[in-house]
Image 1 (cartoon, rainbow, N blue to C red):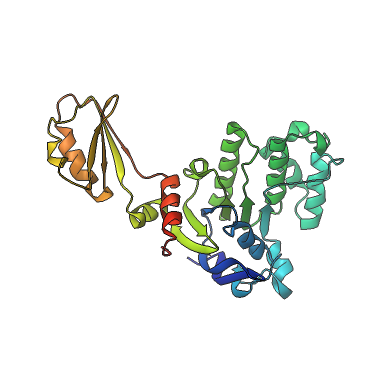
Image 2: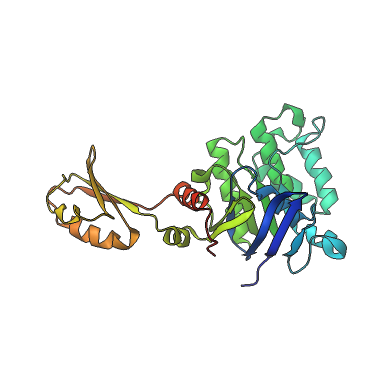
Length: 306
């Protein structure tokens, strides 16, 4: 599938400071990507390069096959929606006036203003001045302006900051709906458990380098992280002795039964052994979390996995 956002050998330096080094990524249409990394890892720099705000030191960025700077820049940028980490608007304007202003800048359909106010649950507050909005309301207004013009590429920098749990779930439903319509979404976040269920793939940056990129299953396999199998109602022994002398499998007693940590490739063997155990009341299998995947690659300084 042709990449909607193509990043090829991208470098960016600020004097002696290396912000990005040889980053290569292809983001196809219809996918939601999580962009992960510590403060200073290069996430915002990458987004600003994709927006054409910054110029690469080396390498290239293409959106829909064209650069976001130069002659093609204006046309390309109209296909991009951007929500910065700290969305700020002129406080004396109402929410509706803010969206109308950006609608005219983007030459978007005026009817979309009212549609988006409903979509981000701001219709009831549309005529209030933005200075009276809570942080979460301003964030939702920022999402609405990013969606003006039906962008093909959405760049969302820490988009759920200030959102309560219900608004966060509504936000991810909105993002998924636009991805289902063919948009590519790249969102950065420090709240890893919050995005784990909502992204198709993740890219992990560290020190300006791409440490890993792929689906969670691909990264779990590459990181060789174990699974945790919980057997409720079972006690140590009782057929689990066969694992006692294996260095790669641990068996521990828990409050409700037994917890087994094993390499992912041995998951089925452990489950088969567990099925016939006396007292077994329930089984759960927990693969490595996004937090653990991220920690493994960052700690390793990792070779890129794509």
